[in-house]
Image (cartoon, rainbow, N blue to C red; front, side, top):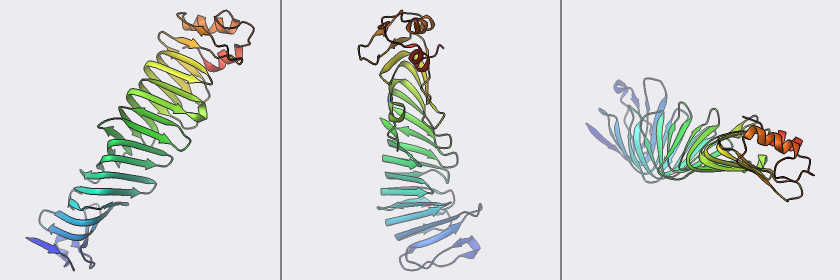
Length: 286
């Protein structure tokens, strides 16, 4: 049996579906007792299968999330799947999502497709597509370059980014670049694990390079904490920028010995400059 609504929807208590009076709107209640409602210019709904199709501006509400599409779409009220089109806006608490399309696989897993932007708290994730698990607050980008930004001016760019919104830890791969103005830090590498919360860190892995306060460290793996301590491993080079701007380089020296040479003024740096505190504060032996 298939029914179309433009003015009013009937009530079918035996099917446990409750229809509201406004034109093109209905609400269903699933077994988990989470209300599911659809409001649109026109709704076509199959009561046996739960399949529905909407025309025009469509709003779906479920489990605290409100999603609006400008060009209608399809849905299933039983498994909460669907596909919405045009000017998507989806909000739940401090989570805000926009995209060209939205694919709903079930009540906990959705994909924002086309110019996807997801904001939660002070972080915003941009990508051609973002797969988002609402139950675990885990996002994964697909389809090209992705960018994660924070309101303090920090940013992370990579070919792919996964972001755990609970821990606020991002993992980026593929031509990764990052910057953290609060730490006066920039860096790049093949991969980066980024956590800019208080007490957090940045870890660069593979062809890694980080510049902080004018001092540059390169290696296979770098870990820089928010307290400006750096741990480096693998073919480590250090370029230290003295206060007078003359610069210097310590290359091809075992890292531990190199740090000690800097502290004693035996490297290629100006021995007149006191660097003990800076060497200890900027670089720690792995």
